[in-house]
Amino acid sequence: MNRYPLWKNLLIAVILLWGLLYTLPNFYGEAPAVQISSAKSTLDLDPGSVSASIAEALQAAKIEYNGIFSDATGVRVRFGNVETQGRAKDILEQKFNPDRQNPSYVVALNLLSNSPAWLTSLRALPMYLGLDLRGGVHFLLQVDMPGAITRRLDAIAGDLRTLLREKNLRHAGIERSGETVQLRFRDAALRDAARGAIQSSDHNLQLLDRDDGIDDFRLIATLSLPAQQNIRDSAIKQNITTLHNRINELGVAEPVIQQQGQDRIVVQLPGVQDVGTAKDILGRTATLELRMVEGTPGDLAAISIAEGKAQPPYGTELYIEHSNKYGGMPILLRKQVELTGESLTDAQAGYDENQEPAVHLTLDSAGARKFRDLTRQNVGKHMAILLIEKGKGEIVTAPVIRTEIGGGRVQISGSMSTVEANKTALLLRAGSLAAPMEIIEERTVGPSLGADNISKGFHSTLWGFIAIVVFMSTYYMLFGLVSSLALTANLLLLVALLSLLQATLTLPGIAAMALTLGMAIDSNVLINERIREELRNGCTPQAAIAAGYERAWDTILDSNITTLIAGIALLVFGSGPVRGFAVVHCLGILTSMFSAILVSRMLINFIYGNRRKLAKLSIGTVWKPGNN
Figure 1 (tube, rainbow, N blue to C red):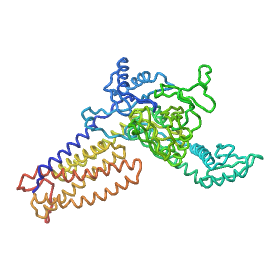
Figure 2: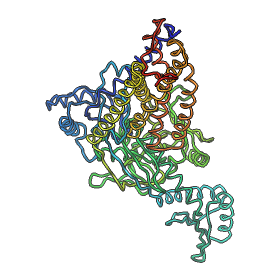
Figure 3: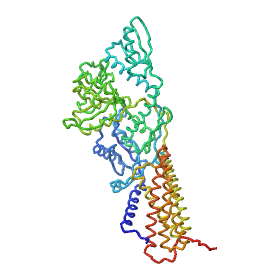
């Protein structure tokens, strides 16, 4: 009667073994490490050569380390203590960045899991820990909203030039002045015609006439108040998206990036131990620009050399192409920005018609129109894609425009490898900041404080678990002990699931774990009380066990579903710590149903299932009617 088939016992055992395997990495902890990553988006990092250089530098300095590990974001070297980590960082900084003013690599303090290689090879990884548990840095960024308006007005000035050119309306100049765009005309008739064309194409502009002379007729364009608010809203959203893209690609585990108020963004980077490195990571956010090349790469005939410095002609800027596609040649770029990353909606690596690596771009409607005009007017010329980071620009690629390109689909190809195509697509896809930002608050949470939080959370959960075990074993005797073992399995599976999903555990998550223990044991209480009730009604012990599990199932299911609905609501509508609590809460409900019903039933079957005749059950005192 109370027996599981062999396949079910084996399945439960395999699930418990899996839970133990994926829980183990969380007990090894983390060790101090130093991470080496590229400081420039246009600089590729070779893990093999970087690892060899790290080993050589550390051996020369007689610094012991516990392994060198590489991944897509960089190379990490692990140490035994914090003091050794600090010394190694100084040595590696000197090795990889001899020029401190223009560093090529980011040498950062970090933490690395102590899990053995055999566990890591099985993808058994520890849970991510939030800022309050692992330590890290917290920034509050102020978005420059006037800067967003200015950038939009610059773009509008370019759009108006294109519009008037298409309408064959000659103007004497278009320029941005403060928060306005001023258009100058030679006569009033042209100005009136231009006003009608602008009003029909852009309803977000307010136009005002101004006459400054006999032949100087001006049209002053300003953005309407609703349009300015839309720009502010989209600016902060785009900045958040760009920060996500950049920081995620740099390998920071589970960063928190969210809006605070109308014009501020909160950034939390768990595991980053020094503020300077965190600022450098935030500085990786870049602006993308498309500019025309003046002449051809390496053509410096128009540049006069004065005091050993290249002086570009008026209206141009000099850049050095660092990808070696043109041998590191200097390239002259026009200062006029033809297109920015704001017009780019997608960038994917692929292949061209000749099966050569290429980057396929998708532009929005306005960007597609600008790009069509740009390519039509500059066939046979070079167009440079410029990535500006920390105020310095570097050329990603400078392809030749072969023909007019329309339809919003753009292809960049020619003399690039598959790796270069993927990296170029990543840089373009990451986008640009819609408005400048500055750090107005910074805070560091040390790893010692995080360890203290972990210790307190662990001990609170442990003592709560012990209290439950003592109560259940005392009140329900052997059945209470089995319930406690099932509760242990529940905690094991919950931690394993969080580790497998690489969820981020925070202090609210630890609170949810403690709450889950109390809620999970409630299912076993229902089962045990149901068995007692069946015994009071005169059922045999074997029949009471079977009826107790079967008849308590409906009540357990109903109570857990209603609790799960509340947890899902917290997960959907909550944010920050609330969502962290909700994730652990929902997963804990699922694991508790498995452990309370299947695991405890399997253990009871092993104890009582082979004994057909039972006089009584070890489930505490069963009060029958008539007992005093």
